[in-house]
Length: 149
Length: 286
Image (cartoon, rainbow over all chains, first blue to last red):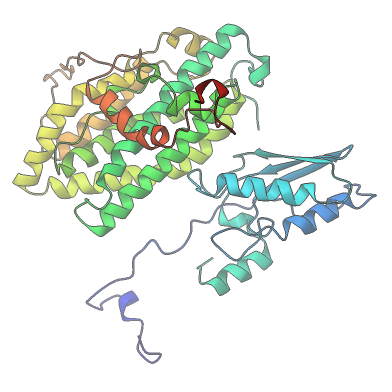
């Protein structure tokens, strides 16, 4: 439609087609402590390994959208002990066809981090991912991509 | 995340006693197989649904059900069973899905597809509610995610049933589907051989019998409100007999081996069931 045309489809007494009502993603509630986006506050990260893992995860892109797994809010937790890193990862929906790919991308990216010997990715489903998990930067990027978040 | 509100938590996969593990396995196997086989049937509607919108909708429902099947199969993976063991290289009689989900759709019978989805999804909703406080954390932690993806399945099925029943011809199709599928829907509530342990350990907090009563209380009034006749007496007693084949103990209709052969065809064609060889077996040469 042209710019000067009113939003007829949304107008109350306008005849003709109406916008589909399912255009926005259901909002969830923000949940304290989720997602994990890097070492924060009280967490000790003396050798900076958690910070480097966060940087590495910021480079792992979702295969469908121009956004990293970190900004999409899929990372729920990172622990490192004696070079053994464990990453808790969730997915936006259970039928995600990129499940194996994402797990493997994350595992490889973290394995490459200095002071990490081995990385294990655990899939977790709680709390349930919603768009509230997307970071501010991520929300910007998704809007540029054309999603109504 | 939180402990079950009633009863002790069973702990992780390695903490289970033999009986607890057998009970978790039986419950999860039936749930995973239901979702997987139903999804297999739904995909038969791809590019054949009555509208592009409904084609996409049912394909999406199928994708969700595959996702849920994978979540439940993962829990059997905790016990060392691989996807190949559980599905692609399994014997058809290893499957424990209810026979409702394995029946073929009569040619082009959309009423069958939406009714089957409705009957199954109401059962699934009740089953998931009875797993919210499961004593097994690995089940409990997955329930919320699955529930969040199920609501629109029911909405889709109910909307279609209302539309189909709005005229006589459509209602006739739904009635025929009800007459055929209602007895098979009862197979969803037939216990596996571990039902008493499943309830005793609090893995599912309701017995199947009470899930079935709740299912009757929802499904019967809804379908009757659409003008559908159900096998129920004036006193509200359901008079439907179980079909010969149930599924929950490995007994299946003749349609099942056929479907199984079809969806494992590519796997076998690609020799994925044979270990790869780097060279010819010297014994086979010359």
